[in-house]
Image (cartoon, rainbow, N blue to C red; front, side):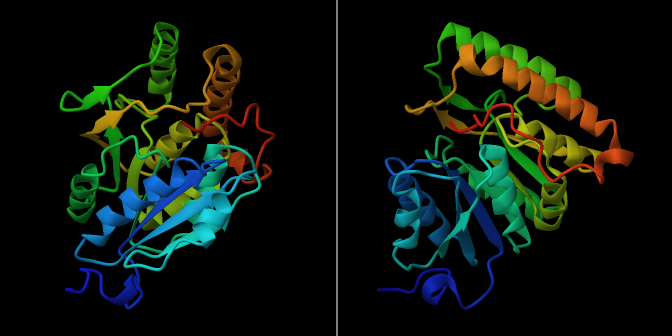
Length: 267
């Protein structure tokens, strides 16, 4: 059998790219998602690695990662006790060391072929590359209700006031220059659904443009989001982000995390 492109076990050289997968109670979707992600990364002509962040799961999520077989793409577990996808992504990004980093959802709703384009743009000098379901070149399979679609439209309008020119802040497929991602992750204070908005806004305030790319995206079953239960909390989160970004001199004196309004955030 020919050797993998990444060498023996993927450990001979440090990774050029690390991908974070936030996970809460994902024992059903995580094995298939990791198989798909590792198969994609194993075909890369350079070392890569995966970090799964266990966000207080009560099922076998952590056990699945600990027992993951050794292969060309190392997979390691990072625990995160603070509830919320934003908290989990923050912990994962701070656990990276690669020149390029990214994160994607455990359900792999975004087709992983987009990794090639994202990394190519990073290598050419872009510092923030994100998947956008609103891109004219994207193919989106969407089974959401009309109520949820209306809520998404309202969210995009509010998020656009904080991150100008970005059409889709919430697609769970984002890649960054590693140094920038770690600098920004230290500052993140939003643990829930709207964390992407703060993440991108802080990248922009450091002079990094956000490059949106087309994706193939599938609406996967198992979403925990409910417009009736979560809309108010999300609006309040966006308000907090707006205030926080405009109170930079006092930001350093704030606690590392504010009490989450709602730990929602997982697809």
